[in-house]
Length: 96
Image 1: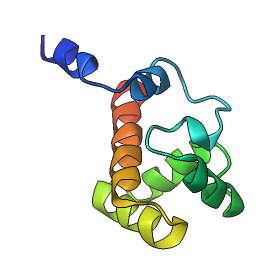
Image 2 (image 1 turned 180 degrees about the vertical axis):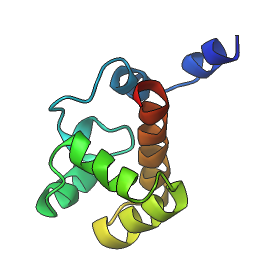
Image 3 (image 1 turned 135 degrees about the vertical axis):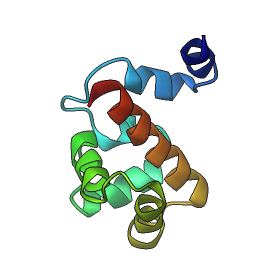
Image 4 (image 1 turned 135 degrees about the horizontal axis):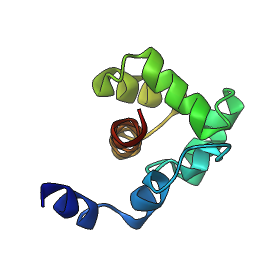
């Protein structure tokens, strides 16, 4: 029952991202990544969602560290950083 509640309260974008493996999805598919943040990430070599996921995993799925990196190094807002790290955390719990 708790899992159903969780799915009901996800954004449509997060639900779509979690509905299948990452594959070759562009980084803009990650929930919380705005158009502007996607441009910044692509410029830094993070053009695919799986590459951003790799960064998250290199940081041992530490959401606070990942959020700080997104804000400081990639120009994310605090909201974007929180949403993006949550999206990748949820994807890991579904697929890893």
